[in-house]
Image 1 (cartoon, rainbow, N blue to C red):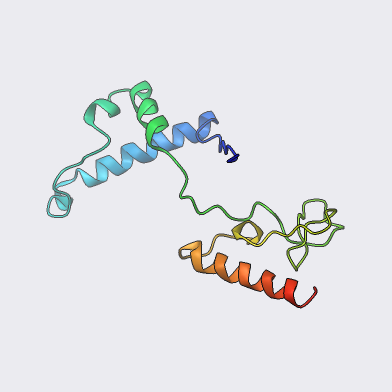
Image 2: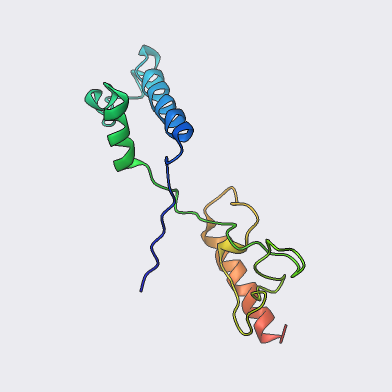
Amino acid sequence: VQPFLDFHLLEEPFDRQRMREAVRIAVDVFDQPDFADLVAERIEPLDSDLESDDALDEWLDREVSTGQHLAGTCKMGPSSDPMAVVDQFGRVHGLEGLRVADASVMPNVVRANTNVTTMMTGERVADFIRSGR
């Protein structure tokens, strides 16, 4: 069974307010004459999506998602750290035989696509397993 991930995007009123402001500012900037040579037409949001907060909220609820580069959800650290999930070898604290070898052990999202870094993490943990660590 695939897990269901609910990121609770824009559930906080302040987050929603800031996103509305950001969208309206971006639309205003790109509608300026100085951008006419770069932006042939705005595809979304439509003018009708910008008419009210409610209309913009409907658009945001349809369109806002993550960048799909999840990272940092399984903190690496010593077992004495109550927030740490895995040790430096990817072993899950308190569970024998389970390791984490993906982007969730990264402390931060890298400044590039996470694919190669995640593959390297998996290879490194595989090396630890092969070497008996």
